[in-house]
Image (cartoon, rainbow, N blue to C red):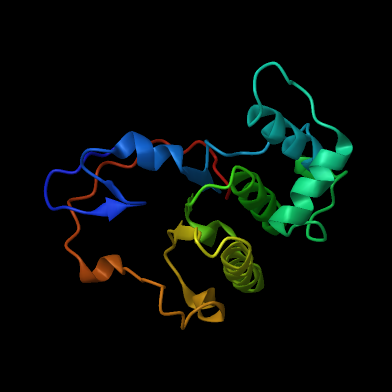
Length: 193
């Protein structure tokens, strides 16, 4: 966890220097290598069920299949993913969609995604950018009082033009800011490549 050493800012109405726990409690992550990886032996449906169980009180350790389908409909993913497919059978784009869905289920105000460039095909990245825009729009329509902020890191934002042009979009190019000296690269764990 990084801590602010200077400046000021607010996120979700909370001071970033003092209320980090509040910000973390209303944030989700997706597509972060080593953190949000799907279990290859679970189906998409099982991943959704497990996530829904984790969001319930401890004394209710189950969900009905209807609850899973309702969650998919509410999140806008009912037609996007093959529910009975195992994670090991999914394409990279489908894995991205599944991880975004899982992050979306708790209704967080912020979703952070790391390195959309892991989607190797330009068409997949274009689709992913479009999907992010659609998810953001569906949340804005359902809850205009609580918009969804999406933070995405990438090296190549060429597909971003699909959802670009919105007045609430902020792009930060690291080429435009002073970068610290790079730390030594950690040993590769295989990752998504």
